[in-house]
Amino acid sequence: MKKYPFLDLALVNAPYAEELKAAACEVIERGRYLHSTQTELFEQEIADLCQTRHCVSVSNGLDALKLILRAYKELGIMNDGDEVIVPANTYVASVLAISDNNLVPVLCDPREDTYNLDSSLLEELITPRTRAIMPVHLYGTPCWDQKLVEVASRHNLRVIEDNAQAIGARSAVPGLNGTFMTGGLSDVAGISFYPTKNLGALGDGGAVVTSDDELAATVRALANYGSDRRYHNIYQGYNCRLDEIQAAMLRVKLRHLDHENNTRDAVARAYTDSIANPRVKAAVIFDGMRQTWHQYVVRAEDRDTFREYLAQNGVGSDIHYATPAHWQPCYSGLNHAPLPMTERLAGEIVSLPIAHPITPDDARAIADIINRY
Image 1 (cartoon, rainbow, N blue to C red):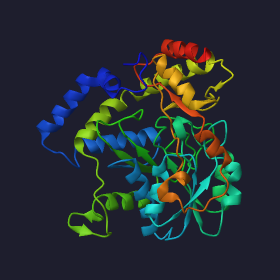
Image 2 (image 1 turned 60 degrees about the vertical axis):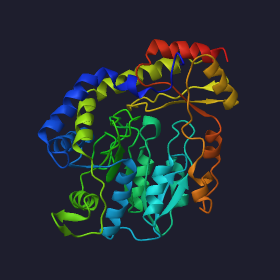
Image 3 (image 1 turned 90 degrees about the vertical axis):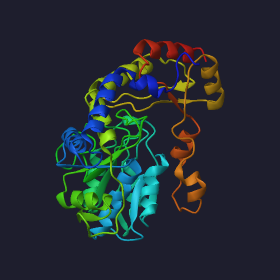
Image 4 (image 1 turned 120 degrees about the horizontal axis):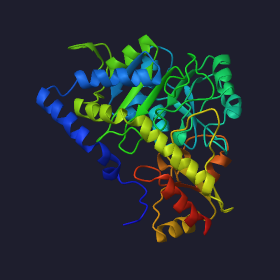
C-alpha cells in the first residue's frame, strides 16, 4: 500500500457516503428508475452550471460525443466522409466518436504549455470537407482562445467541446454565446461522469449540453431509441439513457464540486510551487482561467525510471496517455500530418496523485521526493 496512492475511489467517495446512501434509498423507495425526478433535476443543475439552455443526460461520455455527431448528421449539417479536427493527444474516445459516425478524424498537434489543441495549426488542417473542431479541455485546462473562435467563424465550422475532464472550469476568453464556463463555450459539448472524474458517478454516465433547441431535441430522441414520444420512432436511435440511481449519486456529488475543484487547485499550486528538479517539468498554472485539475501532469526525463523511483518512495502515478490514437492498432491506417509534440509528450508525461485525500501538504511532500530524483 503506497503512502500516496494515485487514486482510491473508496476514499474519494467516503466523505459523501451517508448522503449517497440516503439518495439511493430515496430512489429505491420511489420506485421510478428511469426518466424521473432525479434525472430531470440533475439535467437542470448541469445546464445551469454550464450556462446552457439544455442538458440531455446519457449513458457515458463517449455516447455523448457520438450522439452529438449523429444528431448533426440527422440535421443535414454533416455527412459521411466529412472531417472533424481533434487534438491528437486526447483520450481515444474523442476520436472513436468521430469515426463511429463515418466521419474522418483530422489530428492536430497540441501546444507544449497547455497540452491542448494548438489553434495556430488549425488553418493548415482545414479542407472543403471540414465541418467541425472538437477542442478537448485536457486534464481540466480550458482549450479556448480567440484564434479558435475566429477560425471556426471564418470557415463556418461547428465547435464541439469534449468537456469530459473540465466540468466547472472557466475560460479566460468568452465563448460563442458570451459565457465563460466550459461546456457552454461552444455550439455543444459532451461531458463524462466516469467514476474517476472530478464529478464522477458510482458507475457511468454522461451528458450533452447545448443552447441549440433543435440539436438538443434531436440528441434526446436519438438517446431514447430515436423516439420523440412513446412508440413513435423518428430516427433509428440507441438506448443511451442515464438511470435515476446515477443521477441521484451525481446530484449529491455536484453539491460538493466547487469544494473538490478548489481542493485540487490548492494541491496543484503546491506541486507547481514546490517542484524544483530540472529533470521534471511541473504543470503550468494559467492566469485568468479556472483549471479544474482532473489530472496534474508533469514531464520527466527517463519516465519509466522516474515512475519506478516514485513507486519505491510510496508515490503512485499514471500516464494520460502513453499511446495516442494514431499509434493505436485500430487507427493504423489513419492519414495525419506530422505530430511531433504529441509523440514527444507521449514519452514524457506522468500524472501525479491529486484526488482526495491528497492535500497540499502531501503535494509538498511528494515534491520533496521528486526534487531528490
